[in-house]
Image (cartoon, rainbow, N blue to C red; front, side):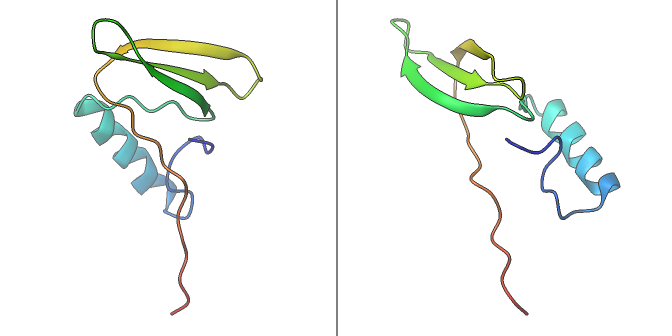
Length: 77
């Protein structure tokens, strides 16, 4: 996810609370990172290569699932 906390249009308190709830549920957010590739390992788990805010790439391994958000769509009222 690009932003430090998501979704950016929510109040800071709600965003912080949501991030805490995701972490409590075992969902690890990688703020400021962009996905580069996803591949399946021989053991059936997933590997994710991400590019961090500094441009460096890193690989996350042994993942059960990968979820990527593409952003929010604001509709006029």
